[in-house]
Amino acid sequence: MRHSRTVAFHTLGCKLNFSETSTLARSLEEAGYAKVRQEDRPDVFVLNTCSVTENADKECRRHVRRFQGINPDAFIAVVGCYAQLKPEEIASIPGVDLVLGANEKFDLASHVDRKLASAEAGLHERSEAIFSPIKDLKHFVPSYNANDRTRTFLKVQDGCDYFCSFCTIPLARGRSRSATIAQTVELANDIAASGVKEIVLTGVNTGDFGRGHDQNFLQLIEALDQVDGIERFRISSIEPNLCHDGVIDFVATSNRFAPHFHMPLQSGSDVILQRMRRRYDTTLYAERVARIKERMPHACIGVDVITGTPGETDEEFLKTHEFLRSIAVDYLHVFTYSERANTTAVRMDDSVPMETRRDRTKQLRILSNKLQRAFYQEHLGTTRNVLFEAEENDGQMLGFTDNYLRVTMPFDKSHVNTITPVKLLRIDGDGHIIGEYPTSPTATTANCQLATAN
Image 1 (cartoon, rainbow, N blue to C red):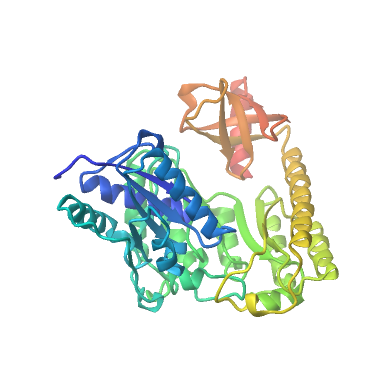
Image 2 (cartoon, rainbow, N blue to C red; image 1 turned 60 degrees about the horizontal axis):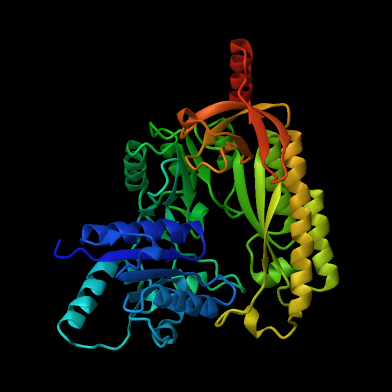
């Protein structure tokens, strides 16, 4: 460890990016850098970008300017999906010193060391972009975040072979790949040893785990269910065509997997799904939802939806709205379509006006609020196990039930990072459930049995 420089990180986008940022941070700490907060005027800033974020270029420039405002002399490195898609464009942003593509970002420490050593030697190098063609990216790098004692995002898969018409992810992250089951279980055991109680499995196309290893996602979750020390596993997202009966039935009977599914839908119109090149139709999606609720009536189902893709007429949008009301889903993540370079959709000539896209997004977010509140109300009066987080906010603590109900209680340090039975009383103004601890031993035992049975 030759130096004591400081580094701060900022992450845009998904859980996968957050898990990778933690891995990058550990590599820099091992190289002798001290991780600090952004406001502590670090010597090095690292921006982990996202290509899905609307106005990715503006977001990138805004954060670079912000870093320069904090420390004008700081070294600024940019990595992530947008860095793979537009490396030279990012390198031209004033203040950016280094841009690393998808194949190079995990060598961040050595690249930063090299650039800083050159600067110390008086060699004023211009901004450098180091990247390679995405087709050359075949190696899988496991990642997980280690900033939260309670919950860790574990990357089990990367890349995607689906090439949907609206998506740049295959161009930014390459083909589908993963570690082996044995390697993933070993990592889960390491996480368990750190005291974390919940692991969230993340990936670009998580259900596609095992490609190239003659293994599959069901085999993975069966193996992870045996990991001691982890009390909950949660599947962050899984494509409906990969969320087959075997996966659903296993979660319904498993020891540790939470009854919570997040299945991307994107559109409730089969016409639009076909134009998107999705690998399912609304009939299959409805069957998956029905199967989950049949096996686990208490399960929470979240949905990704995109509004305003090319060709989405008022009639096709209404089909989406009606479809979402007709199936037993519990909340929506709604995204407004925005054009992405080098995708099929951007070349379609029947684009939807931005004002219309945003209005449709607003309508679906209103629907989401109604669906979520109805799901919360269904569980009032019941008792479920809650995993409480360490953060204290105005004397309150927050936690999640296994089926993703957010619960608030008076802060009690003894309950941090523990799974505790809580009776769900009412919904507060923030949309959280106010709970209370069961009082009598008899009630506690009965309610714990109820939570376990459900």
